Length: 77
Image 1: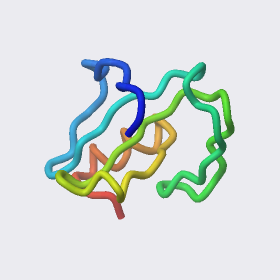
Image 2: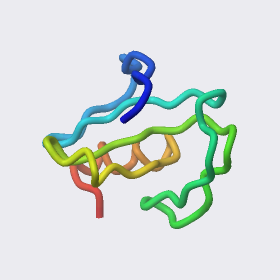
Image 3: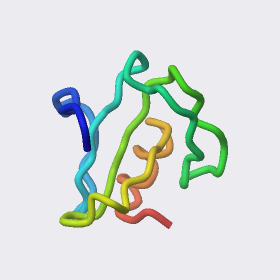
Image 4: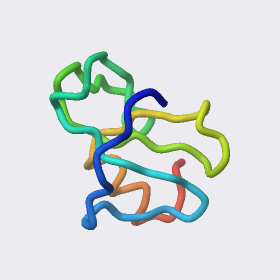
């Protein structure tokens, strides 16, 4: 993935089988669609990028709130 990511936020909840990192707003250069709510994660907004372990090409960009909900449920869908 290009430049190294910011250190993982210790308050970011883990989800078994996934790697997750926070992306600060100043590093968020493109808009994405959050798979948790299907709404936009606009450029410049801090968010979470996550992918299944060993499948970095499958990374997705989540709103922090949506990631927390998914992690609390223990699943992405």
